[in-house]
Length: 378
Image (tube, rainbow, N blue to C red; front, side):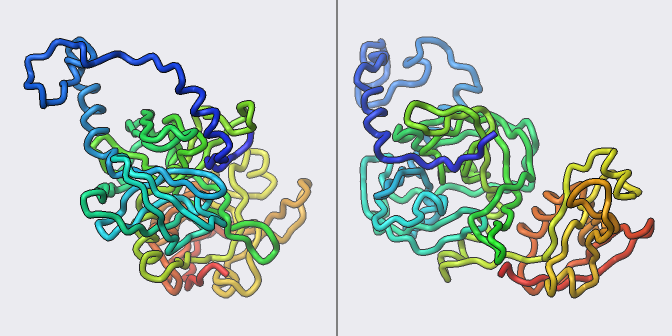
């Protein structure tokens, strides 16, 4: 399986243009209507039948929120974004504007302008682009609450896939609390982990990066970031396989105001590595007395966890690179931890550098509460 950030090279615009040369559209102007000539046709008049409540809801949602979405073009590629506030701040992915010397922002109305990158966050792959635009062009979207999301809930993505601006796709929340590798490198050349990621089957393709993921109330609940796929088109671009990922809006709520103010954001740092998704065999080999929790495989020397006395595995087992004797984290501040993803999501959405957390670990069959003062990621 391959994980791809969903930007797209500008060279693919030619392919998109060719695909539009022979459109098969219905001529809605020929549909009879009793409305005044100046009024737009209703959905029933356009489709020629009584639309369902679900169809009406989706049509209304698009008409209400699409004007707050934008296409972003750079000298290296393109992506999507949305209007964050009336001051001209646009939210997108870091990888959409990474290394760009020039950023163009295209609004749904047809208005186009250049923007300036004012803040970037490599950990969650977020960025803020500021534009000077007329107030009439700035339609900030409403932010939702990703804490209240449920698996199975309907969501809508609007963006610029393959250069097709204003494209809307529909799906569901497939899973919550996923993790992805970030673009923030560690001292040893590996990468920190981005947490609190939403998984969705709404169709997301190259060019959707940085665009909004809405709930049916028209609130943004995530920022589309990546897809997992084994399929690629003739240009080598990743093609949607039904597994997409979005940065949760609660991460956006914490990060974006700080990016606007100072240009960067510091994440809380615990200083551990975890071995997740342990099979029954591995649980037995490690001698763990619980099946859920985040097993501490490594502790960074001199880091917050190390200073607080959290232990990593140090005894060789029959499995290469798997050591027993480490703590099993079962709670943080009283919140149950089933796996490392839960721990990371809690830290990222609730805590910052300098905060004190209480980590509950199972060690040699006993539960211990350990206070840890968090640092910022180095």
